[in-house]
Amino acid sequence: MGAQLTKRQGGSGTRRRRARGGARMSEINVTPFVDVMLVLLIIFMVAAPMLTVGVPIELPRTAAGALPAEQEEPLSVTLTADGEVLVQDSEVAGDDLIPRLRAIAAERSDDRVFLRADGAIPYERVVQIMGALNAGGFRNIGLVTDGEGPVFGADRDE
Image (cartoon, rainbow, N blue to C red; front, side, top):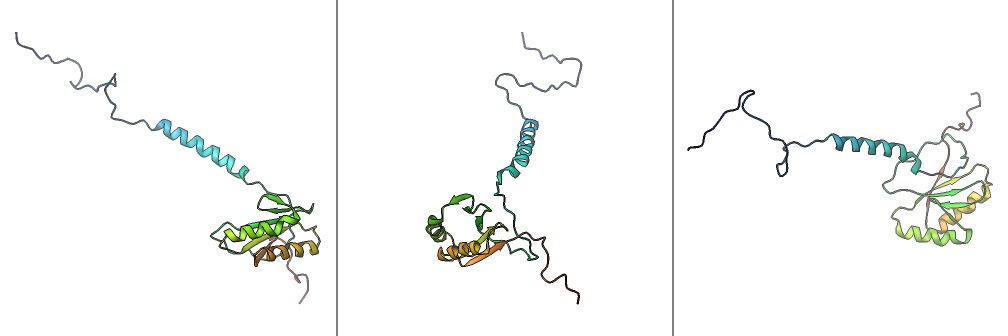
């Protein structure tokens, strides 16, 4: 009337327990996690270029080099061929430009601004916008051009 132990035949004698009910698995299956991460990576790689929306302007061509990068995102003012003025991506009316620039200058630590103007815009209008930038508190104005233009005086034979 004692209890007997019986050894099962066939196999090594040790079995792996399957997860049933309350038993916990000691292995983590990372395959679904990796699959999800790869799908998200592909989605972000496809969507990231679409997030940058630009204003179509034809920049003048020069041989000038690029300015060094800044710590803070630079303020960009765009003057389109239609005469619209955009601060970053939002259109600003002519009367509201200087007060808006003063409010932005009060929040920023850097007084650098990049002015992008279409090449078809008269020089007088570009200078007026530069005057408004100066009146708005921005003294460091960088003119954005397309860097693949001709070099001034390069066609002379010396």
